[in-house]
Length: 220
Image (cartoon, rainbow, N blue to C red; front, side, top):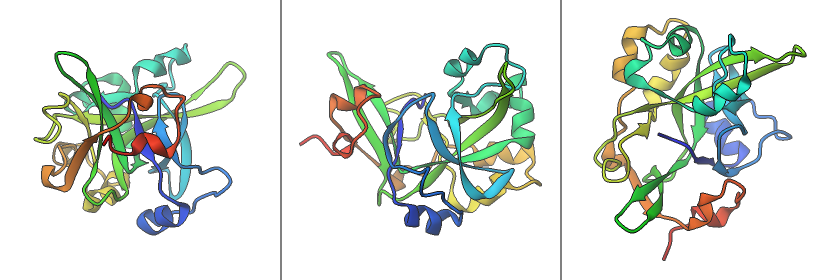
């Protein structure tokens, strides 16, 4: 499961890395992103700009938006089997921008919050799916889910799942109109262990209300 992450880089870093237009009035660094928040994504329908979708997928057919609280993640192994995700895999894919995520490592005594990042702490993108839902008043709400996979060697002692971090060379393919479902098995796989690192962070991260730089710093 991936239930918290961060996107803390500056606008110019995002622009340079992903070659998208960023609305500086909308974008703010987020140190403790959590479900229901509006967060930065790049969708296959509008790949030249940074969009802001709500985290927690609400399928277009849903009667109750609360279903989004249960659909923050989608398992890569069953995407083609689940009606909620099968069609989205074909038509509504997105990059979810990040530079790290959190997971809680269970021990006999407690849960230890860990921050997991690429070794150079650079920007990357999770593989995501999105949809749009219309409420009773006709307002359109765009939402997303993060795809997860089996853990790599770094993650396996921490948790039994990890978010799919796309390799740079696969990001364009993930957004491409010619993407084929057969490509998913290769792309939606654990990221390279040797390119990642993890460290313990403060329990301040436990509260979604805490959203400041100190929570991403290593415990010393």
